[in-house]
Length: 167
Image (tube, rainbow, N blue to C red; front, side, top):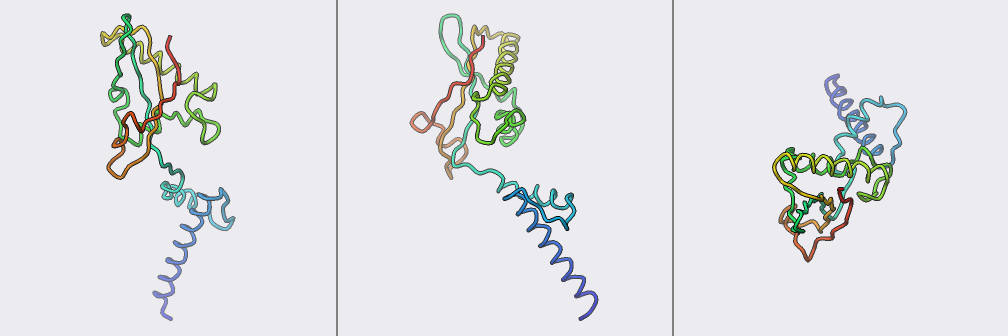
């Protein structure tokens, strides 16, 4: 066999071994000791679709309540101007979660962070001229749909969960 052919086979086998190790690390958090961790982490990052999958979509909702009791939904897009994926990660506040699967508002650390977010929202909305007495943060969850992320974000399909009320 020619040296070029041997080199081609070695590259293909090495790439398959690294990708397989990344997949193994993604699924089991165990890695092969003979492969450098930096290569496994690189391959692990390419396995993002397998790191979390849900059959539901969700979003954070903020409602401002005026003195006369009327309620307005606050458009959070000015506070979350990134892409849908980034916004979802930031709204979930994954940095403050201790266990995967915890619901927003269930853990004291998460509830406190959502309270801080609500206070910031209240201050910023007052600066915009919206004189809300109270802000409520809620979590909406609905089934995912091939028609789009928000396609089934409609009252019959959406479950609403209270997180926090400010003040």
